[in-house]
Amino acid sequence: MNDLSNGLISPAPQSRASALRHAIERPELSFLMEAHSGLSAKIVEEAGFGGIWASGLSISASLGLRDSNEASWTQVLDVLEYMADATTLPILVDGDTGYGNFNNVRRLVRKLGERNIAGVCIEDKLFPKTNSFIGEEQPLAEINEFCGRIAAGKDSQTSDDFILVARVEALISSRPMEEALRRAEAYHAAGADAILIHSKKTDAKEIFEFCRRWGNRAPVVIVPTTYYPTPTDLFREAGISTVIWANHLMRASIAAMRETARMIHDEQSLVNVEGRVTPVKEVFRLMGNAELEEAERRYLPETPRPRAVVLAASGGDLGELTRDRPKCMIDVRGQSLLARAVATFADSGVRDVTVVRGFAKEAVALKGIRTVDNDRFADTGEAYSLAQADAVLSGELVVSYGDVLFRNYILESLLSSAADVVLAVDASKRSDARERDLVLADHGFSGNYLDDAPAQLLRMGSDLGAEASGEWVGLARFSATGTAWLREEIAALEAEGLLETADLPLLLSRISAKHPVRVKYFTGHWMDVNTLADVADARNFT
Ligand code: SPV
Ligand code: MG
Image 1 (cartoon, rainbow, N blue to C red):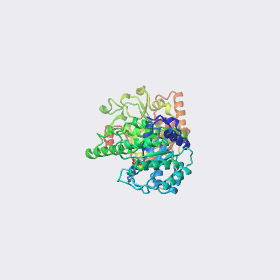
Image 2 (image 1 turned 135 degrees about the vertical axis):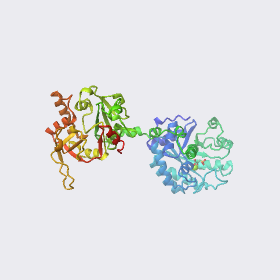
Image 3 (image 1 turned 90 degrees about the horizontal axis):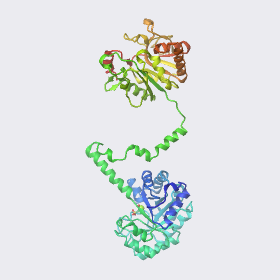
Image 4 (image 1 turned 60 degrees about the horizontal axis):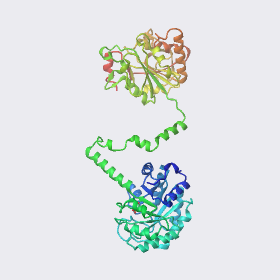
């Protein structure tokens, strides 16, 4: 295994090129592993390789194309950019024939430098090329013409250490060894930094013969795809510089994708596949999501998010249904009232929910909520419960009873209000209204389109009777300022010895005596659960 460590390679273009140069020129055997995408490049780096072979065959195949220059060279360049961005490794690009003559090679090499690519390999064939393993006796470039491509490439490099590997296809095209050596010598003289001697034999005899006769005049690179059984130590002994494992991640991905697709198709289920595929979490890790989260903390302005406090301490009065759980945990079509309320909050971006528990507190269980306890629930009221949530009584706040269901738009409308304190009030006179939640406002509900004057709370209380403007839904929203008023009033109640007995209507009435408290009217689309009949109704509430 090559010992180029990722940590030593900085992504700067010059250092990537020098890392590749070091890998190719050092006496020990180096390895380049094929990649064809940002993802596979990351996998190569994590596996511990010191460099990448950007295979033409694999890049074409991953684009669904043949290895016959069907992808344009700029399309290949785009893939290379993703690969270079995804890793810190040096990349040796399979540049095919250089996509034309010397002039195309010049432009290619300049552009590769701009994309942070460490080197290119060009082969002595003609554009458009085809893969070396297809057909026999493919036509080769004329030696002098190919030397011109090499010289033009070297003259165009933007980094001193940029590597140009000249690939000799003579053996592939069944030309004699003498021609392979002659070509290698000419290409070396034209400026190539290394010679890739390619073979499609199933053993490495001709490769070893080439090496013997070449005598290391320039580093030798090989691609043992067809002579893969050859022990790697023999390559070391032959003095080879670099082995390219040319296409094995692309081929591995075909095998894995095929098997996964077959199973899902045949079984119409993911059940047997899930344990065989990479977990989504691992995909996030591989792509560096942790870094993005850290950057978000650094660069995104903190957007204060509204919190909610749900009051659910008191014992229920619904017989068997609330014998061992508070009302908020009553099941309504497979979901507790609390779960429904929390989901409605989440829909409106209120994700920080604190539930004040008391009666049967162990029964209040829901993922993602915080809880605080009012262990004196039996002889205290709502204001006292709310005071137990002291730690979260800051910033924008929604306060809700634990036994109400309400449509999302009611909450949305409170959240978008400009008022510092705003109550959702049902203007329809319900015959079973909770008397203590009755509301008197300075302005009654009007269905008149032109009447948009905001209503202000005058007071709440059970003595309002027919005078009431409506009934509080059990849902209030406070701006940061409104929450500060709420805290002040809780402190005032405490100072007066009233905190333990006060309910929310008293607390809200007292705030409204000092500060404006807005009333927002609705009609229907919410419900509280006070009686068994309500439970039955709730089960019809969608
Ligand atoms: C490639 O990986 O695209 C190569 C190597 O050029 S080979 O397919 O063996 O020709
Ligand atoms: Mg190729």
